[in-house]
Image (cartoon, rainbow, N blue to C red; front, side):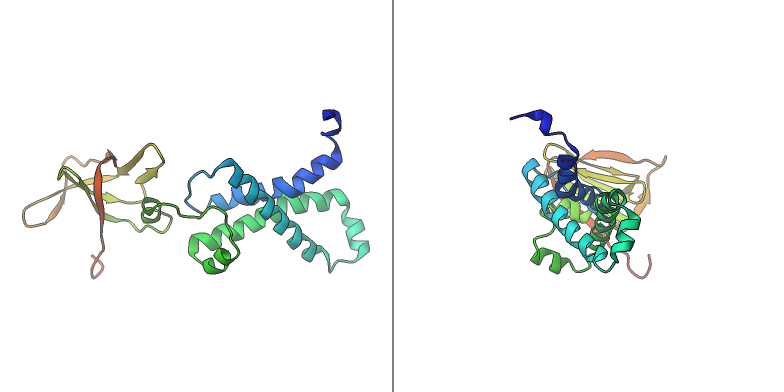
Length: 206
């Protein structure tokens, strides 16, 4: 195989349209959803699928334009509009759609995305729509941690380590009354051996 013929303008255009465009869609979409890093094969397959969809949408956009308009815009401008601009717009639309749950059933029917936006119950519970509130973390040995998960808190999960940062800790008396610790404290806690995480819903605005 002659690798000198591999890096040519035509080859670059091919990979940009059939791979890079889809990858850009995935990068922009990833800003809106919680997901685990997919396998390399899944990335390639999804990038190719999204690139083909990007090309189809581009053809639908360009199709109504007259030949004079297309010539005036120029092939290079159209190329960057297809690979960079349109793919970013599609990624933005897909990301907003998935994060808000719009038409998710339709996307699943189309097998899009290849990776699911939420892969674990942990990620679902602490995802983009998690409202600030009180949580109770219970461990297998009976230990309980009472805290507040808010805008300054963070929940992380991966295959090897999961942890949770609670921006505020509480103590709970025998009557079940919550009170802030003094001095005020937050905590980074490991989720190893956690039995359950309870979310306390507010009642009557409290």
